[in-house]
Amino acid sequence: MSDLFGGLGGLMKGISGFMPQDDPDVRLMLAQSEVSDLRKRETELYAQIGKQALAEGHVRFPEVENSLRLVQQNLSAAQSKLQSAQADKAEKDHTRRAEEEARLCPDCNNMNPEGVKFCQECGTKLGAQKCTGCGASLFPGTRFCGECGQGQEE
Ligand SMILES: [Zn+2]
Ligand SMILES: [Zn+2]
Figure 1 (cartoon, rainbow, N blue to C red):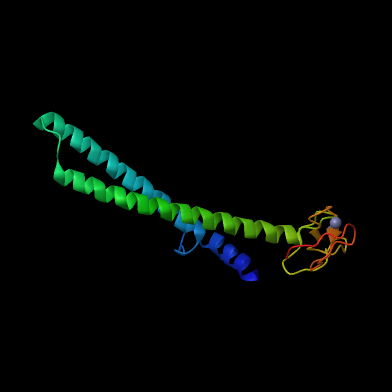
Figure 2 (cartoon, helix red, strand yellow; figure 1 turned 135 degrees about the vertical axis):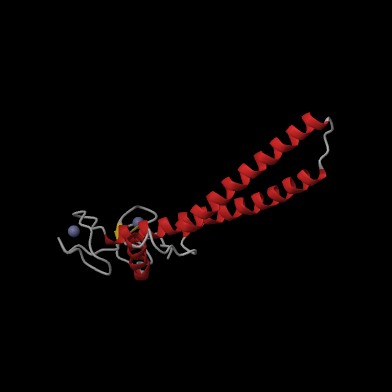
């Protein structure tokens, strides 16, 4: 987990240079541009069919229709790629938020550095979880709430 933050910091610094292809943000961007390119191509092919239909007076154009089918196949592949990139990005954002929350002191709102167990401003134990039953603050790893007896999920 600690690597994630280092990696992100590095990414922010080097954003204009090398962009790793497996980064969810980059994958999302690439998938979005692929989908929009293919949509554009699809529109062009439809326009071509329409133009030819008008000019030549018939409505079947096997060659253009084949390209259109190909573009549509690629489009649906690109769209599922886009969806998976969006899901990965949501997961990454969730992880990042959870990590930030664990560093944020619940008492004084001080944002502590990574890996710190107690707030550097007020000494409150960090990473406390809330009871899923009554909302009482629990120490990390508590299995049953001392207030209401509710079993806690890991
Ligand atoms: Zn604090
Ligand atoms: Zn409880």
